[in-house]
Amino acid sequence: MYDIVIVGAGPAGATLARLLGKEFKILVIDKRQLLDTKSRIKFEKCCGGLLAPDAQQMLARFGLGLPKNILVGPQLFTVRTIDIQNNIEQYYQRNYINVDRERFDKWLVSLFPSKVEVICEAIFKGFEIVDDGIKIQYTKQGKEHNIHTKLLVGADGAFSTVKRSISLDLPNPKTYISIQEYYKMDNSLPYYSAIFDDDITDFYSWTIPKDDLLVLGTAVIPKEKPYEKFMILKNKLISRGFEFGPCVKRNSAYLLRPEKLNQIYLGKTNVALIGEAAGWISPSSAEGLSYSFRSAYALVNAIRMHPDNIIKQYYRNSSKLRLNIKWKNFKSSVMYNTYLRKMVMKSGLISMDIINNK
Image (cartoon, rainbow, N blue to C red; front, side, top):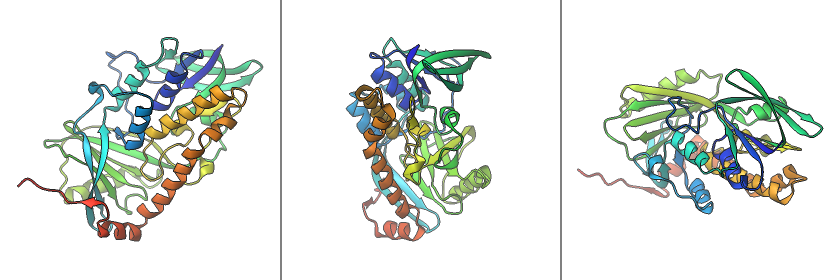
C-alpha cells in the first residue's frame, strides 16, 4: 500500500514527489523513459520550453538552480510582438530562460529523494475506490498491474486520464490543438515572437529559437483545420521576412485555456489533480510551468495540514492561484481584442526601440 501514487512525472508531479518523498511512501508512474539518460526512446513535449519570470520565482523559492546542460541558446530578453491583423510590430523587454524541455523534466526527476519509486514506460488505465483506499490499474510492456494507495494524484497533463477516470462530465477549459515544427536555422534570432492573427486563431502563435533550430507554433481550435491554418501562418511569416530551413521534427498536443474558474477542477475525496490536469494554465499566454509548481506546492501543504480533508484544504491553498487566473482572463480581454490591442501597441507603451549594428 502506497501513501501517494502520482500519475505523471512532469513539473507538477515531480515537484510533489520531491517535496513529499521523505515523508510518505510514494510511487510515480509515467509513460515516458525519464530515468535512463542513455535511452534512445525520445519523448516529445509540445512546449515552448521557456521559463517565464513566475516559474523562475518558484524555482528560486524552492532553492533550486538550473544546471547548465539544461540550457539552450540563446537566452532571451526580448519579445517581438507581431499583430498581423493591424500590421503593427513592437519589441518588449522580457526575461525568459530557454531550456531543453526533455532534459529539464529528467533533471526534476533526478532530484527525487531515494525513497520515491518510479515506474517508467507505464500507462495508467484507471482506478476504483475500495475499502482500504484506491485500487489503480496500469500496464507496462503489455502486462496489467494493480496497486493500492491512500491518495491518487493526477499530474498527467491537459488530456488527463485520471480526470477522465473520475468522470467524463466534468467542466473542461476551452481546448486547442497546439502544433509545433522545428526548422534548421542559419542565423540565431535573439527574441521570442508572439504573433496575433484572428484569421489563424483567437489565441496566439509563436516562434522560439533553440540552438540551431527555430520553433514555430500555434494553438488552434481542433475542428478548424489546425494544420492547414498552421501552413497559412507559416506563409504569412515568410512574407514578413522570416526564414525557415528544412523541418526536422514536429509535435502536437492538446492545450487548455480556462475561461471560467469552474473549469479548474481540483479533484474529489482522495483523488487530486495538479498542473494542467486540473486546468492550471495561463489563459493569456498558455504558460503552464509556474502553475505546475504552484499547484503542486498548494497540494503539498494541504496533505501536510489536513490529511483527512485534502481537497478542501487544497482548494483554500490555491485561492491566490485562482485570483491569478481571473487576472489573466482580464488581461486576455485586452490582448485578444483587435481594437484594444491596436491602441496599446500603437501607443508604444513600455515598448522599446531595437538598436541595429549596421
